[in-house]
Image 1: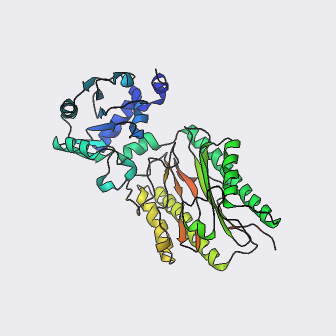
Image 2: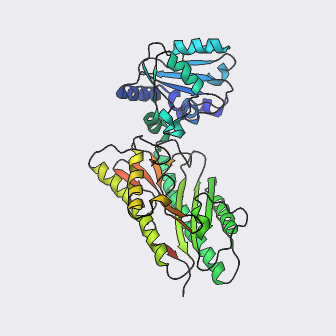
Image 3: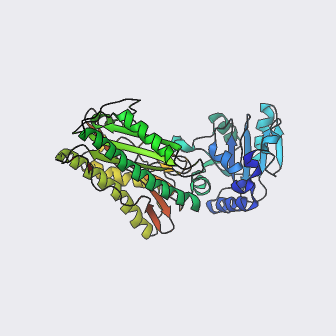
Length: 405
């Protein structure tokens, strides 16, 4: 028996209580059922909710708004699904699969599944076009399961919230030490490169107990204008007068929620006026998102991911830097650094999912002027019972000045 099958208390849909919670949510949203599809590990959301570990054939789980859930699985894979005490229909031929799928959906009119109209939310677009064609031919209306995924997959447990808080402090402290390390080398006239500092940060994340999904970006000046810059083992030498970006993240273990932060430092004693201007714009966008979310939560309004992006983008655009803000404002964070919950995104995609209580995400506006300068500020936010919570104490207010006169 697999680990997931032996610990069904951790698997939402392996428990009657979990099924009941999902069914209540389906009825509230006017869905007849939630159809979860997987083929060769392509739907991590469904696999987690169902407690699957190893499958090689197409499988379907239908959780109706009322009544018992049902399965349609391949004839050779009953062992992989045996921990779910649900009625099972099996197939071997593709013709039998299609007939079985029609039977599984009989009586359903409006069904939620991991799909996204026009690909607006790529993280949810997990149903293949061919399977969608078969379902649509039955007359069933397929709807996005986005808010169900947020509620039942992306929300943090109390333990995850606590561990994320500790990881946030660890990441913050390590960032400050990394800046001090760079400054010490430069002030002594010793060589230190982006790659060498990045390697030190990765090693320290592991040594301090946050090795899961741990990594970082270390970039100076123009190199930081590439938001996903990788210096490799060496990269550029860090020198006096450089603007230094450090983005770092990590979690304690695979089920823990990572902390993801970006900090800025300047290898000098006085920040150049142009850099100071860009920093103030990015910081205003970051803080403006949180202020807007808090104000709207206090008014009892529904908050959606794209709306947070709109706030940051408007502030940066009004300041004249809109063309240089080239990515979404924030990504979901759950047990994955780029999670499956709502993103703050109305640029790369249109994420209209609700920021339900319990989800977390980054807020990380940046300004990137090619071959010139890149600057980003980032912290994480948790949607707590009383509204948005910034998960790091003392967010960065000013670019750190790393060298004295």
